[in-house]
Image (cartoon, rainbow, N blue to C red; front, top):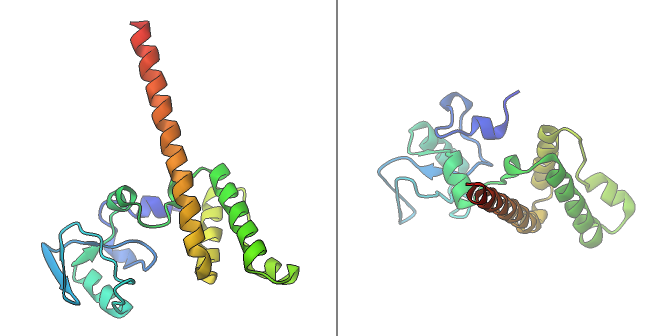
Length: 173
């Protein structure tokens, strides 16, 4: 089974159609919607602008907007779960469930119904997190704050590793 990150390549395959939970970018040289002008490659915040989903689907079919994983990653749009390891995903689930239990559930029974399920399979875990967030939209802001922290730590760790490797190569010369 192909992953979201695999499917959401440079140009999202048209046969899959428009994905409402993936970020959209302007493909046309220029696009004017609700008085705002967008240039090619600009992020298109259709939900924030309250553009009707049917209209966005039509724009996607007309190739005015499209999905672009490279832009989404660079801009920090989308859930970016595809960039997280299984261990990071499990940590995210733990934090989401703690926040849910602490601030959004009155009883243990309510928590058990609403909680984010866990899986040892990374793709399944990503699906569980996405389902959880779509059923509990009030958790999105919290998720985005911890997501950014996890992604930043991963990038910082990779940068440190690269720096150490470069230093060891230079000292070995």
